[in-house]
Length: 287
Length: 287
DNA sequence: AACTTATCACGAAAATAATTTGCAAGGATC
DNA sequence: GATCCTTGCAAATTATTTTCGTGATAAGTT
Image 1 (cartoon, rainbow over the protein chains, first blue to last red):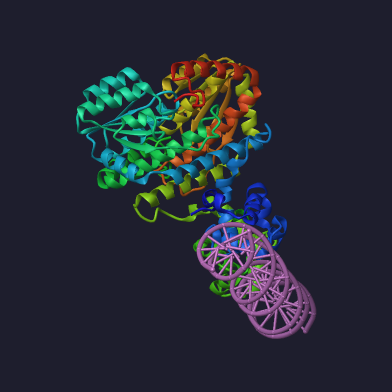
Image 2 (image 1 turned 30 degrees about the horizontal axis):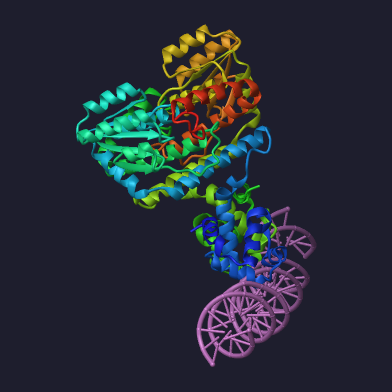
């Protein structure tokens, strides 16, 4: 699929010469994408045929195919090997943040559990009422985001970041309702409690959280979001961007599921907005 | 710098044969990155040398350099030319959303006004009080995000998505305060009013919005966020991801500006959280 | 223990394929 | 009609792959 995963998997089984080639890829990637097979071979102290064999080994047709694959994944998939921003220069900070965000999306995409997300979309589409829970700044944003996205399709959603309210709402929920909760850490004890309560009443629960975490274990359907380590805890945005994208995918699937109803509601919302603004209908739905 | 910008710029000056090559790149990009120079030449109905010349024209050393460049930018920078998701299959929907999000980040990075963003960070760092305004679901999220990020550095921030409150707060603001507002459409009339009011009192105003829009014109410092067309108005997330990344960059710069103070506050917040949870201190700051 | 035999990694050289260069013909433009 | 640009042809160059053979290591055999 992509070279770097393959490299990771195959690493152990590589021969000494091949290992030297792999090292060059990891250490001097810029050189590797621009080099010809001969230059690469020389630098790795191997013969060109060995390079060709290496390419085949990691799943490419040929050396040129290999270079294309390399260049393609590297743009997003590779840079996270780069540690912290080089300097405090705004350009570097920006570059660093953008790269990490793109990388978070890349990793999310790779690890996405489509079956779970489809199942979740299915449940949400049929829900008579949806409760979106989350706390702590990040997850509360995801909860409002769920509300913001789903009400547009004519679904009934209420978001809450208030533990007590969450419990009361869950207690009042019926089996035709759905509770969906987000927890970046997976250790939001109050959310676990709400999920357990829901389970007693037969209310379906969906969690957007780390796999195998307490929150995940308490939910019926888990949409796992596991990003590799290295996310600076003081800079949560890249993780959050991954969550947002997951919500986006979920909401889009829900929209497709309930197409006609969603279209009508969206059109009405849009008419309101256009009338309110200056008649420009190419603008986003919601400022 | 990257091929697609060059292509955009050069497009008009290309000869007929070169135009045919360019068309293939745009229409059948997958073919183009995998093809050899001969295959590409055949498909474009030109001779291989013409392809080589074309590569030079768009700023590459050679054909292979060209392919690397192509593969490199294309992964994120190109796919937005692809219209809608190919199908409703979850995998396609996910791929489409991730690609668009990455692309939004790519475009943001390219068009970022670093000078403006640095100036904004400067003002925010020194502000005695910060008001973060935004409405409409998307921008209100950005406003809370600003609050969520900046309070962690020990700054005094209050976010509001309520027009009347925004006006009252602005009226009460002092010249040492800063008003920062977000508007995706740039046409939030109430925000324009708040900005104008602030200007009368000498309060600095910062806008995160489309360049040259009414909101932008009303602000002292504009951090323009202009993403190319083609963002489905029913799916605002990719635009919002760009805004979030912009906020992230802004907040990081502010953090660097006020380093010691920020570090102290962050540490205290973290202690609270760790004590409250199970002592695991590698988790994100805020769930 | 010594001797096959098989297997594999690897490089040299040959064969093949791809890419570039030089040059000339055909058009367009002034 | 002169000039410039575009383009393709063919040769030259360069890059890549294949083939084949060597040497090393491991496994089996006497």
